[in-house]
Length: 323
Image 1: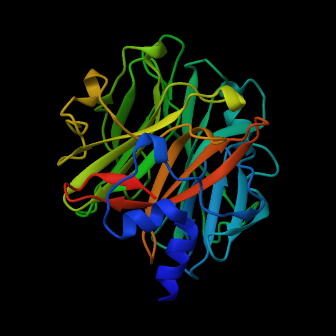
Image 2: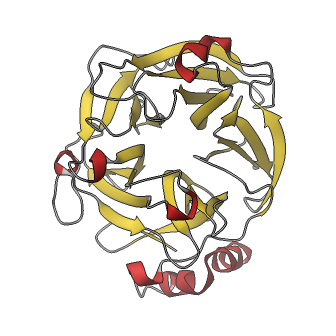
């Protein structure tokens, strides 16, 4: 009963409708973010459940910003993963300390974090890996570069996401604009590439080919590709929106609800600007004790980036909806 109460409290009225089985919300009735308090400024967030039952959040920032929460509601600043800088990334950031889109997870007794180094609008980018046994600020060790793109590449090595399949395979999905979303296989022993194959997962051909921030999540026999369409990082003018497609194979082909391939621009919208919630995107998904959870950022009317958390439901056709 306590878990159900927390679910309904977080979800609000739209969540009540979903829990009662009425079905997913339409675009006109997308739910507001669930209640989060404390340190809620965030951009490109991802969350890992800790062994003690709490939560560790990583987000874009100088040295990568960390936050903790005991209950997925109250968030507290927890310092920087790299308070002394990341000299190994300077060639890609132009000397800036800001690192992008950390993807945090917990495997084999330690936290792993894939993250990107780049500058806005450039395809000279790289994805690096770090690890920590505690996740605390300053305890992260640099495991080195995983993959890079150059100014002559037709793809962009940012926005990484690690997925571990039910059979134990590791895959890294990433990408932004250019020729879209890519995927490589990862060696679980090293966290680095297992081979040289680069898979094409999704591409758009409108709105400056704007697709990025992939996150692959396994549920009920399908791999779901969550991603963002359109434009981030413009405050209340941002048009980011959260899309989804699925496949029975992690490397695709992925199709949206209408059957359109993601390599042909397909994607089904599950969250977009509504009311005073602007540009909700850069999705991450994890399974918690009470529900599957969608984590993202959005912008306020004042243009501030904020942490968004909602729950995910699954309809009778096994498509996700936000509540």
